[in-house]
Length: 434
Image (cartoon, rainbow, N blue to C red; front, side, top):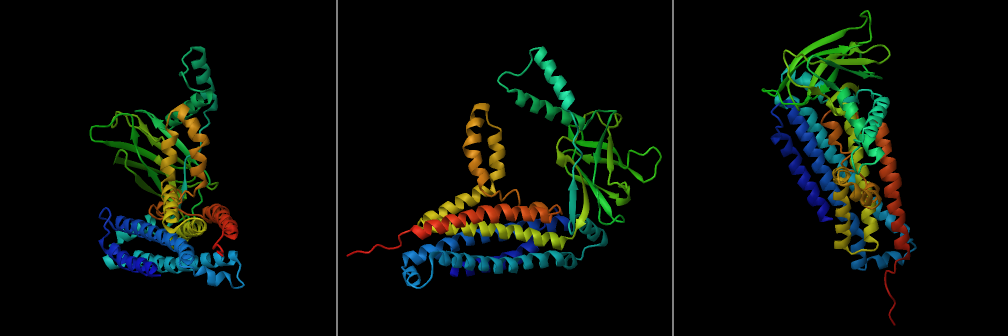
């Protein structure tokens, strides 16, 4: 088909150009992150559009041009015809996806050599980009007793918020208590515990990634912090505890490189932050999980890249089955429109769910039983975007890949395919007129 050739030529031209013009934040790491993010996103987007158009066109055009009559008169069952069309689309997707994934990978790997990067830049990108880092968040703090006492106090004093259910009040109290457990007032410290920290090489480094939130903005928008990283449970020091003093901008992510031997033998790592009252006059908070996390190398960039490409392929399988289903009972324009609506809804499903969760109490009940189940039935493409793993060098585990394959391919795509086989089996292709 000419449209497949057009998409292929378009990607052949755009990807190398992006490799040269992508600059990011001006650093080598930023350049690589920008290219991988936009390169994979562009490849995924164009292949998704190609898959929708080809899968719908392959059936609707055969029916419109009456070419299907010459096929169905032969000893070929209708389900064999649909499976053959699906196989053809997936073979095309596989070939094109492998080709352009290889182009993106090659440009990414050779960019540092072509740029003539110095040793410091190469070390930085090897530690923070050309790797696959597992992510750990602080252990949950048990605040159930404090929440219970706070609720009983509000109830006795008659200060419970009007119009709120008991569950809603407890949820808010729990969220507030956990938030302040991760806060350090001037002159106070906050300690967060991490368990099951298992770097694959104890001679390498791990990274503490953090972002300051504050109650009031400092005059220079910076916070001076004193950190301790290591096994903070020790009475007598047996493993190293590393101190760091830093001054960083608020609401901006930074990383502290720490030798991996700071981790205790049982996988424990403690991180303490002290808010020096002589340097800061504001409460420093780490309210959300992503505000403080530990990253350590758990796999290679190549393995992570392969798994990320598989996520794109699973997306294409779902869209191919959706296109086949739509083409069994709709015309070409309507079928394409339906597929595009599903595709774009799945692409922003996370944003839609978060937006609807913030609506009023009465409207949320209607939304909970109507719109939310429909959106949750659709694949959440944005939740499993490859760029979310490759750009920050986050580990995309095989467990996540198998989970996505089972949910998106083995369940949702297979269900669409079954519906298409049933509909097409009973569809009247032509009427006999006497």
